[in-house]
Length: 137
Image (cartoon, rainbow, N blue to C red; front, side, top):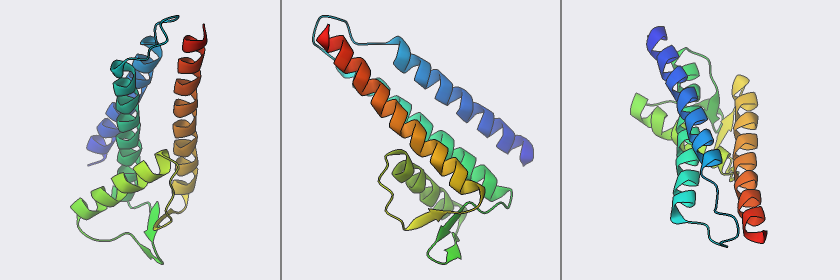
C-alpha cells in the first residue's frame, strides 16, 4: 500500500512539473495581439494536473491515517469513492481560491492548502502577466 501511494505521489509531482513546463514553453506569439485557444487549454491542463496532484497528496495522507480534512465538526467519513470526491472538490476549491468552508483542512493539511492556494495564485498571475506583456509588445 505504501509503495502504491509513493508511486502515485511521484507521478503526481512529475505530472505537475511537466504541465507547468509546457505552460512556460508555449507562450503567446509576441506582436500578434492574439492568445490562442491552445494557451488556455494548456492553462486548463496545468490547473487540472495541479488539482489532481494535490488531491493525490491529500488522499495519500488520509490513507496513511493522517487526518487532513474535516467536514463540520467531524473527520471526513464515508466510502473511499466519497472520500475521493470530497478531496478533489476541496482541492479544486482551494486551488481556485473559492474556499466555501464546508471542508476545512486540519493539521498538516493546513500547510498543504496554503501551498496549493499560492500555486493557484501564481499560475494565474503568471499566465495573465505573460499574456499582457506579449500583447503589449
